[in-house]
Image 1 (tube, rainbow, N blue to C red):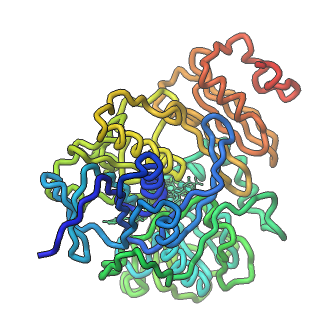
Image 2 (image 1 turned 45 degrees about the vertical axis):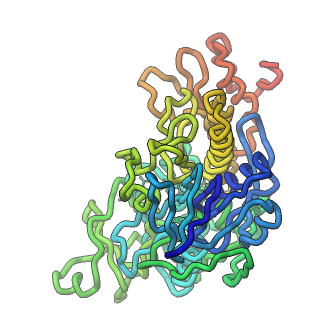
Length: 502
Ligand SMILES: Cc1cc2nc3c(=O)[nH]c(=O)nc-3n(C[C@H](O)[C@H](O)[C@H](O)COP(=O)(O)OP(=O)(O)OC[C@H]3O[C@@H](n4cnc5c(N)ncnc54)[C@H](O)[C@@H]3O)c2cc1C
Ligand SMILES: NC(=O)c1ccc[n+]([C@@H]2O[C@H](COP(=O)([O-])OP(=O)(O)OC[C@H]3O[C@@H](n4cnc5c(N)ncnc54)[C@H](O)[C@@H]3O)[C@@H](O)[C@H]2O)c1
């Protein structure tokens, strides 16, 4: 019989949400012992945090040993141990090293795993953590053609970054990068995507400092006995600009070649044997050479096209890691995205259990200008806010805690195709009825500015390039000024909009 260790606060997950939650708990409760349980030996740390505007934030993400977190927050004990079972009635966690931990308050920050088409197929991979990136790089270094499935963040970055390998990019939509931008913006990017990249990439400060050394030793760590099961992902998700500085080269001389197949899904993954025995004919994009080539794997798309390739990258979103927790416990889970539902205090439907980051589904009545997307900024914000709520809860004044300002308005800054991209509020008019209006300004190869208006008020904006408009537009969304009298001038490039609304 193993002895049980008790902690006031236990956090599960060494990603951005879990580490931020544990760090903030440590600052708020310097006299309490906090346990962070993580299935991955390295944890994620947020550094150089800075606010760009009231709601936009930027930070670096470093992969660190568990030792570093304990050194920085001595009341946080980090255990490299996988939670195998939650007994929420007894408030006990059972781990892979046969330990038991009881808690007063628990925060689940177990992240997500890539949702992979044809899961388990040896020629289909997903990307989530440093280990899966290594697998991808290794496969790519011997590849001359891949099929890329998905139309969100990862697919967009890969379509731009991969060199020396042909890419067939299969998307469900009629325009690229649909998760983040509208069709007009994807047309803005189209010529840029097909251009070859020359010389140094411009202007971008590398934001992620990954340490890929596998053997980080820690004395405080409790060693996990089990590794990955069936190739499942246990590491934390990568973060901003993960693709920067990671070589992505195939074997051919042509530096950059992408063929986009629009409005399709993958119907079947086929072997050469199946192609031959059923006499199926394969396709090749115009001007690409496919003569006499046999491929390790073939993809049949719903438009009937069959492409051969070395391997397939499934960049098709994330499944929250909920199974271990929902088994035997009455968590409410969102039917559509599979996340554990949390309320405005990050509480789940199970007493004393909170959740934050990719694993959770924001189940509260959200502000009209905020939406959940599984992003590092939201993982950090949710982790930090959950720790404030957990602390208030143990002191009996949770109801006095009002929601953090960061949930007032959605704000995300990233880079696609080497352009700065800022997303504010309902940047794609998400969930809005047809009665909204779009104002757009485009300068080819330079900037794309789109504003979403309803009843003359700004509800969202998409800014591509160095527009310098984020602060002004953030204010206009937050203060809901009636812009009807200024509508014609709002995007006039000859008017200094900042002065205008000063
Ligand atoms: C390739 C890639 C690129 C990305 N790029 C960006 C970007 O540019 N900008 C952006 O905003 N976002 C980006 N994201 C998304 C962002 O990285 C995630 O939203 C964010 O990191 C999620 O953090 P998290 O802490 O919720 O989860 P995770 O980082 O997934 O961490 C979950 C943690 O829980 C642990 N865990 C899981 N199960 C257990 C268990 N049973 N017991 C113990 N521990 C467990 C895992 O080991 C891990 O440490 C990217 C994601 C990927 C995969
Ligand atoms: N720069 C950034 O902000 C950035 C970059 C990379 C990743 N991320 C985040 O990391 C996470 C993972 O990225 P991702 O690109 O896998 O997810 P995503 O949610 O960004 O995009 C998933 C894409 O896959 C498509 N899809 C889903 N099922 C499909 C199917 N069966 N067939 C074809 N297409 C399918 C969806 O339509 C969507 O376009 C996301 O939360 C994303 O927001 C963010």
